Structures are given as structure tokens and as C-alpha cells.
Image (cartoon, rainbow, N blue to C red):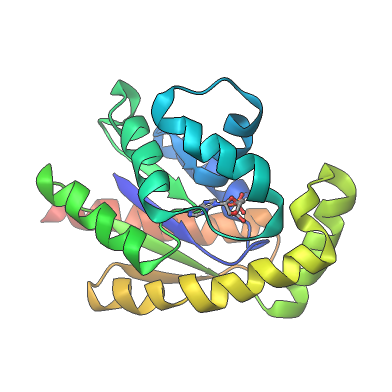
Length: 200
Ligand code: AMP
């Protein structure tokens, strides 16, 4: 199963991604997590430009260039553990990335199964990110960067919801309740989808 999780920063993509990937036994691929790891590691040649980008910009809320992110992800998707499916968290984030992912999948005669759109009110997002900043000490959770990340989400990522809606892939999940309540809803949607696929 190939799943995309979309939501603003603080929507719970990381938490829900972990839960869902362990339920379905597919890898949870977070491009933000990959960039954070790469920033401190010794990369291969393709990743050198991304590592430079990450060192200079990762804490600013800006997005990395589409082509570089797609290259990084494509390398990861070719690993054996991704052959039975995967869950993408934080990718795609732009229309360009969504189109690149579509062509990547088409070339392999594959497609996405579902796009989970995590909906959370702005005030709740700000509250969660402030709490996370004090616990995880993530520099990109600082107030000024949070505002930038939310702005970037609205400008670059929110348009993907229409893109996936048109393809019949988008399912909205009301994600304001606690993590367990949200996961119950996601589980119900995914189980239903598996039943429908089984019946088709
Ligand atoms: P996240 O952990 O998903 O919030 O991502 C942290 C940061 O990594 C983002 O604010 C961006 O700077 C960068 N990033 C993560 N995923 C992408 C992506 N798909 N495209 C471009 N930049 C990304």
C-alpha cells in the first residue's frame, strides 16, 4: 500500500505515520527526518548538494529544491523494504513534487492508494508546536519559523489537496483530538479501503 500523509506542521504526521507504518508493516518515510539525518552525516555524491542546502536552510522553514528532494526519495524508494509499499510523511509538498512522484510511479506502473489529509485548526497547531519546541528543542519550531512554515504550507502545499481530490485519492481526517482518537479514525479508513480492495 502506498500512502501519503498531508497536513500542516504540527498536524501529527510524524506520530500518525509511525503508528500506521507499524500497523501496515511498511516503512515510514519522512523527508524532513531524512534531511535532518543528512545534515549531520557523510552523504554520497548526489546528496552533497542537499546536505549543503540542509546545513544552510533547514531551520528556516523554506523548502528544499524539488529535484533534489525527489532524487533523495527515489533512491530510498528503490530499497527492498519499500517494494510492498510505504508511507510518505512530508512529501510531496509542492505541485512539482506531486507531479514528479506521479511520473515516478507511472514509469513503474504503480499508483498511490490514498492521501490522508490531516485537518487541525490554526490555534491548535500553534499550541502543539510551542509545546514541541520546549520538549524536542527543534530550532524550526521557534515562533518565527513556525509562522514561515505555516505560510509555506498555505502557499505551496495546500493546493495539493485539490490535486489529489480530483484524482479521488484524498480523505480528510479531523485530527484535533488526541493521537489515539486520530489513529482510530485513520485505522477505520484504511481498514475500509483494504476491505474494498479485497472485494474488488
Ligand atoms: P518536516 O519535518 O516534514 O516538518 O520538515 C522539516 C523541513 O525539511 C521543512 O521545513 C523543509 O525545510 C524541509 N523539507 C521536508 N520535506 C520537504 C519536501 N518534501 N520538500 C522540500 N523541503 C522539505
